[in-house]
Length: 323
Image (cartoon, rainbow, N blue to C red; front, top):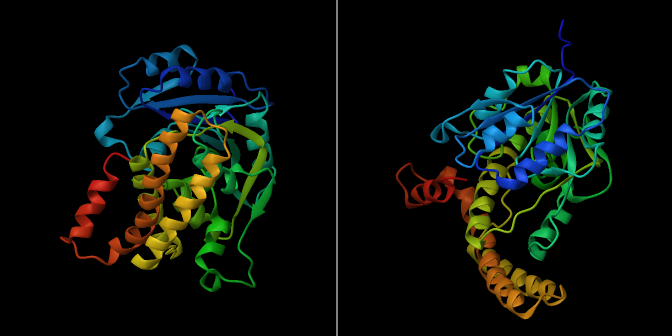
């Protein structure tokens, strides 16, 4: 009789290319005491990603690209697994050693009060210094283990939005969740930020979230300033809805913030030792990014209060399309 798996590794994919093949190999090479099942849910890749997953020993499911949803698609894949712990990985997050899985899952299974755990992320070498710095400042980029839960002496309603964010920080780039809690609280239909929505519900229900920096993946992107602006927009819509966070309250604050961050980013690039052509390109990127970042943080939290047919609502639909 086939043993019931301890862990299911679930990876959504679409045209993952050569890096996905490295990720699949690294996942299969993990050393642990767990019985592991491996699942890919693929959005009709045209580059053979689905076949690569099958060759690597993954069970492959398919979802139409038009039906992909960050929360519901993961729920669909998880529902087909049997393990008591589910590891969620994105297609370009490369485990950095053979102990990644054990370091992520074992502390969670040993902690009945914890709902989930997540890995440390290190940037891909040679990327954008500004985005590398942003990752280093995020919880997932740090090197100190933590376990957060709500203090009964400080109810949720008394916390500032930033305190709430630090409490619920969680990242499905590389994470693990308890299946029994997922059955009670699936990710649901979420076009973006399914991880933060899930961890917020878990924290408010009295569970803990663990960060396990010994579990490490290499993951970063070097995308256009416009793409990063769109993602910041989506992030700050979520942060406002879930946590009440409004990082940039006024247009004046957005303008001041953009000018300040432009100066900071240009200083960072000047110290990065980049070749002249790359430095010039990065400087152009930095100016666009600083303004996009500030304006997105100002405008996105205002969407929910805007009328259904308003210009801001239409802008929101356009910005979020395809993210």
